[in-house]
Image 1 (cartoon, helix red, strand yellow):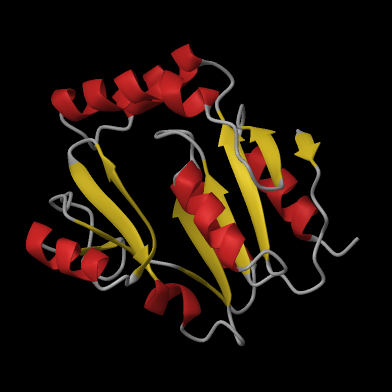
Image 2 (image 1 turned 180 degrees about the vertical axis):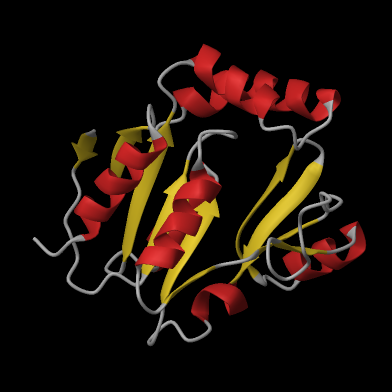
Length: 193
């Protein structure tokens, strides 16, 4: 684990998990929601079709392209991105709802992490989750069985670009070689110093 210039805040309200596709962001976010009292996952919007195991309003808000564009035009998104031919975004409403009383956990891309941090620098911690190797990440994407071959290829093409991205905000970088160890490291970083 490499800590990059992170000042542990006394009043963290936003925990941002970012990294390339398939690195374990969603698993880490789910773990944190179960372990941190009074926390909730910030459900993002997407224009992609739901997977068989996904539920609207739980995993994502599944919206039409027109609805997503309307939300963008109205500046309703804290962060948004066009990825793998689909649009993804987290609305300000989801982030700010009950923010005084709840800790929000977000699973976003690097640009999203920077956007959230820039709005709430005193209350946000960003975790950049990395794979032990590109080969391992490719294997994880193929084995998880949730995407079509075309989608997997699109994700694989973007991996190197994502891994070369340099976050422009303070963050904690963790290499996810073992999910349980990674979860422990994230929890340890969240403990008051």
